[in-house]
Image 1: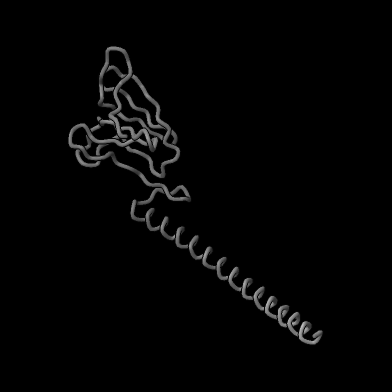
Image 2 (image 1 turned 90 degrees about the vertical axis):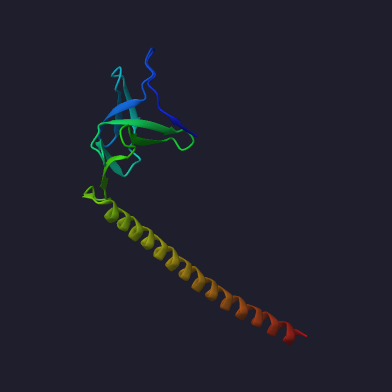
Amino acid sequence: MIRTFVCEKDGCSGNIFYLEGNEENLNLICSQCKSRYNINVTNKDYIIIPNCSNCSSETFKVYRDIERDDIYLKCSQCGSVPEKLYIDSDGVQVSYEAKLLNDIKQIMNLVEQRIYNLEVNVKDLEGGQNILEQSLAYINRYLVEKN
């Protein structure tokens, strides 16, 4: 369930916030009473810039997804999202497209490695099947010669 984040200070019901961000925390500052709230964003692969990507406004409405423990930000003026800087696995600032392409390459490498592991397992099973067939042939021959 997604809920609008509202200032929790007594007497204040502000739902518009200024943003201050760094790599680990996103600080929300109520536009009415200046109360501060820290939100952990270490699991994100981007840094939020405290400006609207469309109109350069600095105030945002904050929405919290309780089930996913995530937040969403919308500009209080135009409804757009804040600007984001994407960081690749080497810590270099890249475009969203470059980051997405790099993520796809990593997934493709993982899939390729798993396919290789499956091929090795199939060859091992084929080798085991040959040994079982030979063993059954020897047992069958032994039983035939015994009788």
